[in-house]
Image 1 (cartoon, one colour):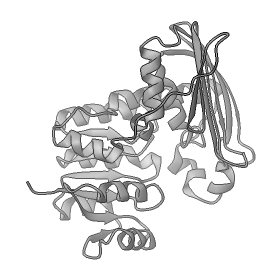
Image 2 (tube, rainbow, N blue to C red):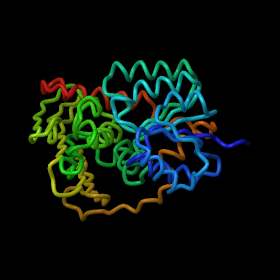
Image 3 (cartoon, rainbow, N blue to C red):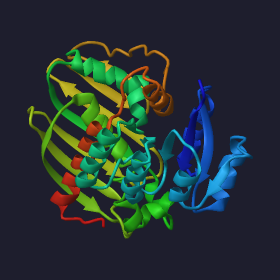
Length: 320
C-alpha cells in the first residue's frame, strides 16, 4: 500500500506535535508544507527531516500542485472554515486543530461539505485519547457516581502574557480570546465526558486590557438538571487544569492529570489507568484506512462551537 501523503497548513506551534505523531506512523508521508512564515516552514522541515518536501506560502497552490491524500490544518482559527472547505472539495481528508470553526453556521456548512465529499473530517481534541478523560467519561456513563448534579471545570494559564503581540490576540484571526483558544479544550471535556445539554449560561468576561477576552467565568444550567461552573482564566502565573464531577453517589476529582474518586464517608480511591494507545493523528489515519470510525467528528465539534457561541452571545461580547 502506498503511503498517505499529508500536507500541512500552518507549521508553527502546535503543528510540531502533529509532526512528531505523524512521523511515528509507517503509513504516512508528510509531502508538503504551507505557512506564510518561511522560518516556520524551515524549522518544521529541519526538525522532522523533510529536506526534499515542497514549501508553499499559499495553501491553494499547495492543494493544486501537490498530490495529497489528506491535510492537517494548524492555522489561525478564523481561517479554518475556508481552508477545510477547499481541502474537502479537492477530495482530501482533513484534520482540523480546534476550534473547528468560529461560528455554528460555518461548522454546519463544513459538516455538510465533508458528507458530500465522502471524506474523513476530524477535529483535534486530544483529550479524547488520553486515559484520564476516557476513564472519567466511562465512569460517568456507567453510573459510578450516580446522576450528575454539578460540575466545575477550570483552566488557569499564562495565556495573556504568552500571546501578547501574536495572532491569538488579533480578533480577525483568533475569533475570540482564551475561551475560543485553550478554553475550547475545557469545553470539549465538559460536554464530551458528561454528555449533558447546556440550555442556559450566565457569563462574566474580562478583557484585562487586551483586544480579546482573557478571563471568563460562566455558570451553566443543563437540560438534564445538573449545574456547572466554567472558569477560563488567561491571566494566571501558570497552567493548572481541574475538574470536579459531583453525582448523587460520589465525585470524581481531576487535578493536573491526577484522578481521585470520593464517596461519602469512604476513603479516597485513586484508579489505575492504562497507557495511552492512540492520539489525534494516529486515529485520523486509522479512520482514513477504515480501521475505526472518526473519533472526534464534526458533529461533536459543532457542540463545542455552539456552546462557545452561546457564551459570547449571552455576554454581549463580539470577538469579530
